Image 1 (cartoon, rainbow, N blue to C red):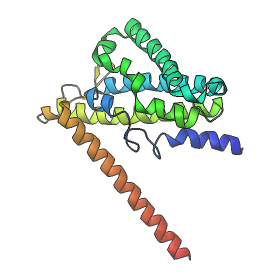
Image 2 (image 1 turned 90 degrees about the horizontal axis):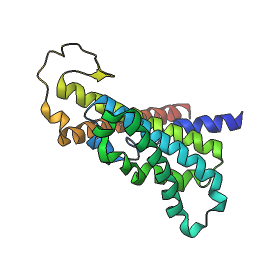
Image 3 (image 1 turned 120 degrees about the vertical axis):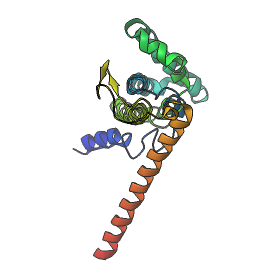
Image 4 (image 1 turned 30 degrees about the horizontal axis):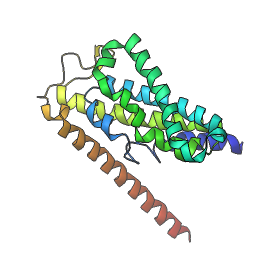
Length: 216
């Protein structure tokens, strides 16, 4: 039971407590550049999740064979292998999305999230824990991207397109703010979400502290 609870904690850790984008503020480059549409954010999140999970698993399995002095180059080679798989697969089966995401798919190799999890988690933990950690971190990153992309697309185009389907039909009854699909809109959206999340966390901490004082 304790092992299962540890796996659950490892998975949940990447969703909110250490969300790579909203908490650790890692992977900012793709988050700000491609989050103009919800499908862009979704597929980028899927790609990062695959690379995170696969590289975590392989690094955990071979961690005892990697000399400490060359561990970072070895990690990058492993990560680059999975990025190549993602890049070629998207180019074959999702060519339009591959073209939209462009250089940001190959740049997953240098994404701070993946190298950080390889160094701090996968190289020190068992394979199953590493896989769960990769899935949790990847899902947290994907959720953050989808939220940011949805807000920017709705406010910037007055609609939301999911798999070719226009969610709001002819569009919402307001004039879209073009700035939301431009770089400044990405910074504003991300800043407001991070600020709101930090505010909610502080209020929760204060309430917990007040309850502890009341009990004592």
